[in-house]
Image 1 (tube, rainbow, N blue to C red):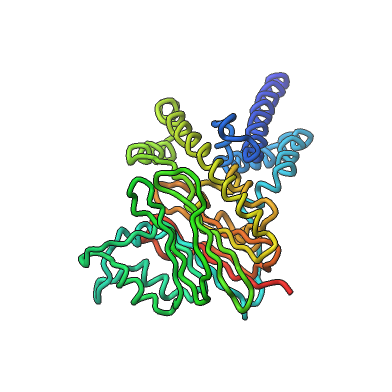
Image 2 (cartoon, rainbow, N blue to C red):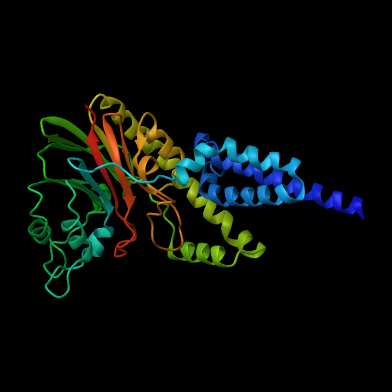
Length: 365
């Protein structure tokens, strides 16, 4: 009987080691170029799952066979940096007096161009107007020329607390998608960062803030192009995972995610080249990255920068609020010119499919 128990423990240890390997791959998946390692580059999306399973193994071994606890403990130590990116644990925060308040928000076509009328107001527009932000970066900023929908006049009237604004059109193939920056400080210039995409893009806005030239890069990187059927299949996979669903849906989803990740890698490198040009200035890089914190795109963009949420946020910071995609894909990154006072994802408004992310930043002396 003792031999049977030993045999079972060895099987459990073997499974633990397999999970440990997957944990390590997911933690360092951002170093796999998506074009060469398409599936491995997506493993970062599952990091927290592997981390939790590995943690359960650690608790099991502590009571069952303490010596074997070395394996899951090593996994936690070796991937602690990835855990910190995925699930920062910060308490308190600095005094935001005098800090610059930044808001980044994928507004989903300003709530799909919902009109703004008394008694039937556009909640997204109301949120931005009441945010108190000094600089607002919006992605999927899409308006209508039809007064039955949301027009530019409506937006400018409601956002009159921002005397400066600039809009960069991502007008590929006639697509109306745009990136916008609304500011309480003068906007000196705005230009698109050139890279190929049908419906996505990045733009550089140069602002004058109390005599300092501040560079803001607003991004909407390549979306994953998941259809309604793909999203429904993913939800069913999360709700009731089974061998059949994994066989039918998982690899199809992985294929689409991998294809999009490869496109984002090219876009991220194009944005990175612009970041390099402005590292000597106060720099803010924000927007919808359409990928998690353990992705190739995030690593490339965040190199030599601070992830504001990792620095001052708490928890997973899930910023996409539909279809059970529990990931933080919206970000605010800054260079060392800034002290990050606070950062949070605001899940109190669900009118867009993204939650807004905000940060308070103070220029270092």
